[in-house]
Amino acid sequence: MRKLSNIFWLGTKELRSFMSDFVLLGLVVYSFSLAVISQAESYSQELHNASIAFADEDHSEISHRMAAAFLPPYFKPVVQIQQRDIDRLMNAGQYTFVVDVPPNFERDLLAGRQPGLQINVDATAMVQAGLGSGYAQQIVSTEISDFLSRSETIVQPPVNLAIRVAFNPNVTTSWFSSVMGIINSVSMLAIVLAGAAIVRERERGTMDHLLVMPLTPFEIAMSKIWANGLVIAVAVAFSLYLVVRLTLGIPIAGSIPLFLVGTVLYLFFATSVGVFLGTVARSMPQLGLLYMLVAVPMNQLSGSSTPLESMPPLLAKIMEASPSTHFVSFAQSILYRGAGFGVVWPQFLAVTLIGALFLGFAVLRFRSVVAQAM
Image 1 (cartoon, rainbow, N blue to C red):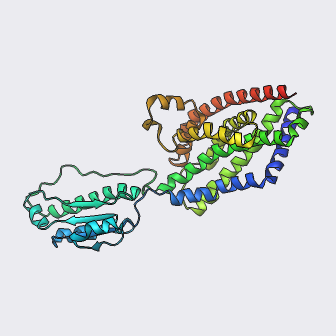
Image 2: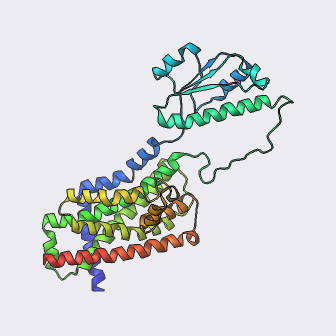
Image 3: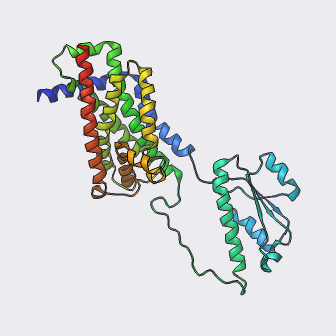
């Protein structure tokens, strides 16, 4: 009981120290509020208000139908231009897409001659160009198929594809990027806060005060782990309920309390990494450099940006040993697909076991550093 009491009161001291550090406090508030909103609203991968022009040299029914099929919000209203102006307007960057319908296009189409149709794309607008070219091709193909289906000589395709998108029907990027932003912030801040707590004690000289008290290194380390973990857990709950749900209006399919339980388990690992890095670093700049070497690759390769299946097989196998990979996996399962504990318990178990192993290693490292200081 005495150990628990020491850990609790040392943790409350750590919370008071954190609340008085307005830089770290502001970083936590920003990372789970404005940063999430900014990432959700600005990192868009949907086609929106793309500028498009038509050089209609055929003036036929099919060309008019194709021009009318490019609708908001994906495209701006179609502007009719002359064929001779295509290069000049594209070079000036006035249009991202220009569709050139050649003369006698409808006549050749009905005669089965397979006429060509040109879609000019300004690829300097990379996201718009990549997505919009696919949209434009699909719109043109659909209008041509509908137009030709009125002819009795055209054989209808034997199969009609019905594509159903699960969990994100409109394929909206913000539904994904907002939650992934929170997940990445959990790893970042848990490591930074726990590491900064160790470095701050050393820089201020208060570590020596702790060492002369009847405290063990385990109690000191655990107090910093639970206090900083509590700060992150509260910030995650705040961000999911108030920022993602209320402000951004993004639906969450699963149980937020279940996700928070998994987050707490993961925080034991992430804060342990921070404690370990704090024992290695001698100053805050050194801690920042170590963070970049350890946490940035861990976040980038965890599956939050690219699925593990898209990585080289050896790298994917290595990342399965990282709790961050399992954290991202059960976070996506719970928040996106509404999975329950019966589905995500293997990831919970993996995070717990690997996190406990690294927690023990971090405490041993902290104990050896304290022993050298004494």
